[in-house]
Image 1 (cartoon, rainbow, N blue to C red):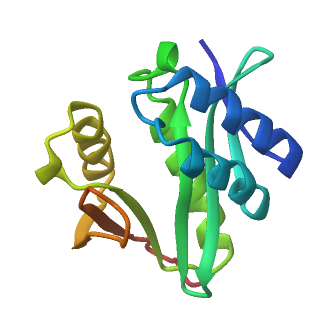
Image 2: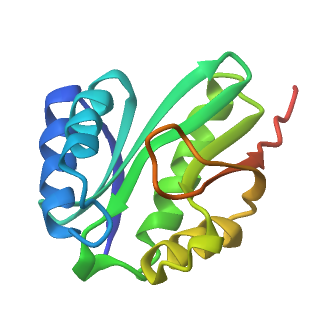
Length: 158
């Protein structure tokens, strides 16, 4: 199985985000939040994982500050999880972020203290890729604690 990662446009990103969201109701169960994601990915750099002619994963990256990249949205279709596709998406996102001179990458996910089995997998996935917990917050209107994680990107100056 050969996976390729390519940058896609905003229309493709929104369609892929909708498709993957529908495939993962245990992760994306808040319709109003999903609508925000569908619109939000349109304003990001979008990397898609493709097997043959089918897109199976999406990572949407934004740049809130010149020195920081942020994973706005990321997921892989259920039948293709645990195949290394997420790792490849992160690797390509790191390359893209470094080209933009970002020296860190952040991501927000459900805090491990919430003990949600799906999001514990997500938390451990990011930990395995050198993301470290930075701060736990409870956004206004949320019932859950969220954790921001950060990964330092090593820029090689020439």
